[in-house]
Length: 332
Image (tube, rainbow, N blue to C red; front, side, top):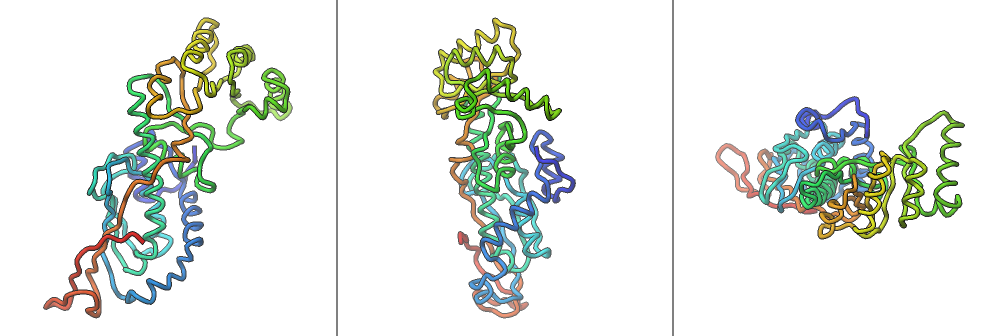
C-alpha cells in the first residue's frame, strides 16, 4: 500500500467514502504528473499559446463515452494543480463508481490555455486508470459469489505502478506484492538457479535470519510434486501456475487434508471465460496480469465552451459583451 500524508479534495472525498481503496500519496500523484507534463513539454504548448487568446476562460466537463468504472480523478486534479492553480476541478463522481455513457465525471473551469494544455495528460491518466478499474470490475463480476480474492501483479506500466494498482482497487481487486522488497516470491528462474523448491526456501530463510527480517514467502509451482514440496516447506503462499482446474483441486484437497494454512493462488491464462471455474476450484486467490498490462482505456472526452472572452473570435457576441460558443468534444 502507498502511505500518504496529504490528499487533494477529491482524494479526501474518496478516502472518506471508500476506505477500502488503496490511497494515493499526494507526492505519488505529483511525481506522475511531473513526468507526464515534462514528456509533453506542457510549458511550451505552441499550438495553444498561438491560437487561444490569453484572457479566454472556459468551463469544461469530463464525460464518459462508454460504461465502466471510474478511477484517476485525483490525478486529473493533480494535472491542473501543476499547470495552473487557478483552474478549479469539481468531481461529479467518486473513484470506484460505475458510470454510464454520457455521464459527467467532473467539471473544470479556468483559463482556456491551461485547461487545453493539460487536457491530454488528464485524459491519459483517467482513461488508463478507468480502463484498469473497468476490467477489474468485470473479473470481479465473473467470479461471482466464490470466496476468492482477485489479485494484481507487477505487470504494470513502468513508473505508474502505484496508479495502476490503485486503479485495481477501484475496480474491486486486491493489491498483491507492490515491489521486490514487499515479500519473497520464488518463481521458476529462482528455483532453477537455486536448485529447486527446498534449497531455494532454505536459502531465503537463512537470508531472513541473517538480516533480522521476516517476510511472507510464496513459491511458484507448475506440478503437483512441486506443490507438495512447497507445502512441506510451510511457506505462506503457493502459486499454482498454468495448472488445470482438476490439478488445482487436487492441491486444494491435499492442503486441506494436511492441515496446512498456506494460501493458494491460481495464476496464468486466466480470462473472463475461465475465471469462474478456476475460482470454484477452492483456491484462495487468483492473479491476473491482464488487469494492468492489457486493459483497454475507457473512452472519455473533455467538452469545453468559453464563457468569458475579451474579443469575439470564434463566437457570437451577446448584448452584454460575452460570447456564446457551442460545446465541442476535444480529443487532442
